[in-house]
Image (cartoon, rainbow, N blue to C red):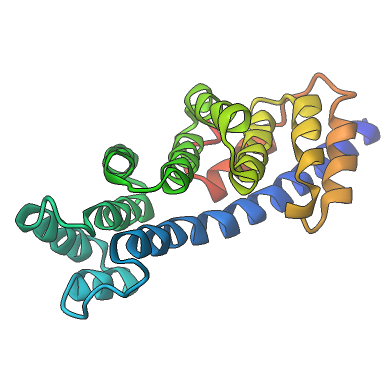
Length: 225
């Protein structure tokens, strides 16, 4: 009994480490995409001050409904503008911050359709996969990430895809596969040794932790179902 209790604690500790890293990665991913896509549209120049300033302000202030209104207004009046892909990314982020995953997915797909660079499209796919993870749509997330792992020419993209694919395997209780994925991106996990030892321990048990669902629901609403 003591052995099982210790294992439950260790699995929860592992999930806390991974969820903390997931949150950090997710917070920066969309804004990085916006910067890259904006640079592609303007050859490195900043968006003019008057463009989207109000929507960006509302987004920064976490007034997401107001931000959505401003971003939609821009898209309506400027559907073919060179910045429209970046605006769809911002719109997607505003919905994701409210855990409105369907419109978040819809707008990230629109950004992918208009994106000018393959690296932006592939980064959008990673963000799309994180939305699927947040909803517990593991097969959809796994499909997007596996495709990137096998077909992307960008080493950074492949590393990010491997990280999130490892997280996907954790959700699926596939401890061995998760270990294999994280081993290839150990540099992305500041506490990789702890994570690896805990996942190695997990392979010894045919076990699905009820506490794991609680952790997932805390960090990613809907993912612990």
